[in-house]
Length: 396
Ligand SMILES: [Zn+2]
Image (cartoon, rainbow, N blue to C red; front, side, top):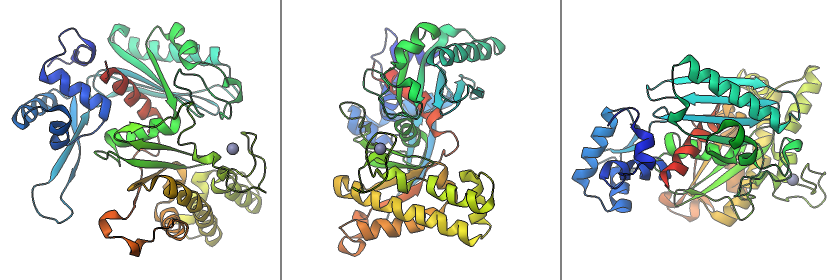
């Protein structure tokens, strides 16, 4: 397997052999164990281990997790995923005030991860031109051809319809109604795949992170907003218009305040970190970010600990709603709020236990819902944008 081969394997003419089949499967599903690969593909176990050894030697596949069985006996199970840095992929994350761009290549190194500030409510045309320039500069600097690009994944802070259109209630108002593909494809000259930032975060976690090898889980993002993603049978559920997993807009309080989506009493108004940050900023007489509040809480500041716990308590009520709809076996908690670790997780789980109608003592341990902190809190959406390209190319 040659280093340039990922594009050929995913979309080449001779794509019927076991190597391209396995690459496509890992591209579409994220991390899988050899047993899962065998079940899904029908390939023989001996073939699978041979192909995996070949792909690992070439750096296209990496082992992402190793677990022992819950009984602590038997051989450990390994999970394998496409190396996010194999093949050239571009990930772009559109955040509140600018772009993050990640370019990765076959040599196991991220060529460039950069942030381009564009100011509040930046224009789509400016974003597309800025992304094109950043990508071109990175490829030129590294002596790479843009012909080797598998695609460009774009992660957006807001709901995205299946055709790539940004729905209203986006964090960046000017993008409402804009089609991400139509904005970026003509300027970048590459196939563009777009998804909501929390869906991208879920793709990163299931491909290389805390949910590697999990077929079903819910990602809950705790930040200045509240977001999330629902993964069923290894696929992110976007919903018919892209509103699936938008937990921040669960209408939880009929008498609550107005939300930026136009509704009243959305979960985000109380369960995001904004109320805690406003309160902490007032008492410290300076604007505090989530990172500041978390640092204060970790240093033992009682008010900060209390504010984190109260945020977690209100989020746990939302998780109880999600529990009653989906009863997931695993919640992955992401977003910058998750930097608080157990200071967030413990009151969150306690609140979930209180609000979810099936109590921990009602079921055996194997049927209890697990909670873990995400692995890529700093750049999960950006990394997931790269994963988005692999998944879409994997379906070719
Ligand atoms: Zn709302």
